[in-house]
Length: 623
Ligand code: PEP
Ligand code: NA
Ligand code: MN
Image (cartoon, rainbow, N blue to C red; front, side):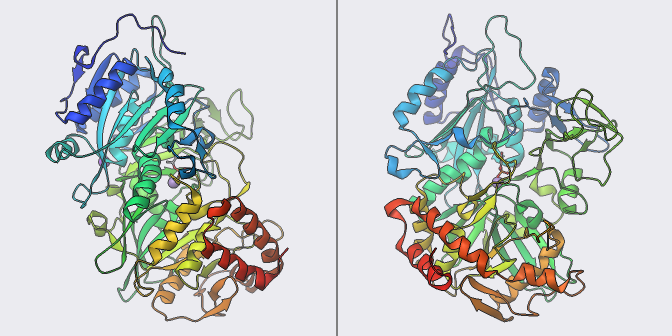
């Protein structure tokens, strides 16, 4: 598999642009990477506008991207990937801890030495004919008490551009790292398509062989073969969730797959809420929600990742380690998420695998009620009317279901000022949720922290297009972290339980479980969702303040009749009862499913979770 290279070159032999670092451990690592990957040139990224322009020009020449109409989407581009490189590859994602017990059973484990033996030949010469980009970045605020640095080395200019949007990166970060001789997470990425001899490049280089690998003891990331978002933008899922979750276990905090929002009541009372839903289940929509109930407002702090740490006051503070959104495009519209639309109107965005309109704008399914007369689809095929692409099937989508917009958070019109606070915001509530057509009611409040952890640990959802594999299959997704936990799921749940013991019940956020996706017997959604979800947020806020009654049930507190504000909402009594209530027969089926899920944890299943399950079995009867 390794590529024949006649003369192996060292870093100092290579043509270089940008300013090389002076950080000794970084230089030593870069020497190793050049020695292994053998790029043709090195570029040290500074994150400047000039650099952005140069990388865009280069990607345009290669045919990777198209510039959009600058009057409609200023400074924005459209990238089309290889049709086989469109989503995270969970099957090829590994946690390589030295001890096998520090991984699994929800993630793939391999011995780190064995993985290095597999991947070293893949990386050998992998960057031949390409430029290696060195991207210093910081997840979270540079002024955080313990800033989390990383350096991604990649042969993809698309990655370098995307990292500028999603992270704090470039010269300022490098200066900070050098000033403090800071530790950093080395994150190596290659698309895995060396250009040797007479080989010509393709618009979206990648490799059929893909590995997304986390050496969790050493805090090192290796990613090979994919240029797609979650596989290649290593600050995001790989660092800020998988590696950070391990750091958090060891350091006493939490790295979570959560949005962060501020809810403001008509009286001006502020509530900070974090919510964990699986990929493509509406985190971005909830984060930027426009309430339908008069007088209430939402401000956004983040849409995908939250780091939670206790403050000196015993409250749990949430920060967003990212600087941009990497949102699922289809379904996003002025009706479903006007603030996301306004954010991308600001330009400076990368669209991936969406459709292109004749006037140089983007389009995707669900953006407008009618399909435009003419588009170029995500595979670059002309498409006229509703007949589908020329040479394709009429039922194909113009935008890939997992197509994305990557856009700076600072362009969000409802960005909270508190986003800039290094210490973050104190959480009043944590919400878990999933996509379930039955069983899980619209909203349930946990009895206490431990019961809330049980809700999170047993959370389940029907799969979406965000990862490769079948769509619509029910799977457990603990805290929406199934693809992102960097260690053993039993230890992860235990860590959540332990975190709750570090503060008082009154200081801890209240925990809720929501489901916007319940359907009736005909498969119709019973709850309108989107802006109407503000009614649920209002109930959450009133529960936090102890201002509204709830009914205690075996599955937790549900809204008392009349407790949920449905004023002005067009919903039948039947649908309302169907969506707010719980059905005993459904829960009799659910309890044994939870038992089977917990069986997969093995002997390390926390006792507290057994206790919670026993309580449900007592209420609903054992199967
Ligand atoms: C991705 O898929 O690349 C990604 C960043 O996130 P998610 O799947 O959570 O939307
Ligand atoms: Na940035
Ligand atoms: Mn996500």
